[in-house]
Length: 295
Image (cartoon, rainbow, N blue to C red):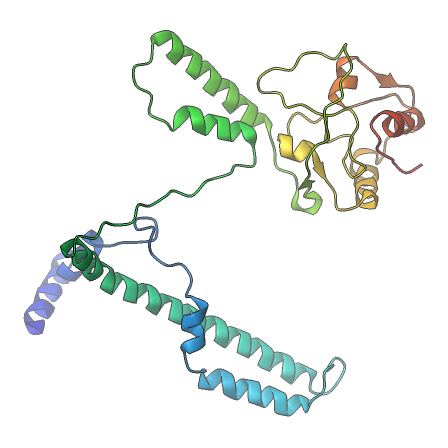
């Protein structure tokens, strides 16, 4: 039988046709995207039950003998060799784990169909798959998903036009957003209660609410940057000093201290508040928005 299959595969290769095994693998292929039950990682109890790898054990013993109980090796004659052994151990562990993971997945594919058939013959019902909840960083993207993904039935032409307009507005809002560089990645905190003056304008359905009094770790310029997402605008730095460095190096670098400067907060911007010079701007930010900047 194997000789016949081999001849057939050789003829298929000569004629430029796919082999029988290749076609079967293509038609019966089940991947992680197709079957959500496929394990991604090997459980720890399975890894603990496996015997230690002799190659890794030999490398670890060689490293321990070379170190001879020493903790620090920097600047010693054995530093290069110890680091080489450490890199080799790490590479061997990664390779071993990848091989175990692949064998674990292959074993699942070999027995999953048989288990499904046995479960069906025994009258057991298959567990219902619950889709994971996807959380988007940009709120407009979540609203767009809620409009596009669900299947809408019996919708009037007027409502269809309204939905299209909302989709276009959300897509336009997403296009105006941009990512914060990883160097200045902000941590999102829970905003305090909103405090707005009576003359502040009314916000639209897509405009988030920003409190007048901010956290000491928030950037006063990011709050008014409409090209960023809501999470990025209300995000906080790890420390006030880090925020101060960010403001000085990014927003105030090269700016004339005596030039006029506008407050970027939504409330102040709606009132057209422009400070005469940088010193007045820092005092305003500290008194009104509770954000202290360097003098």
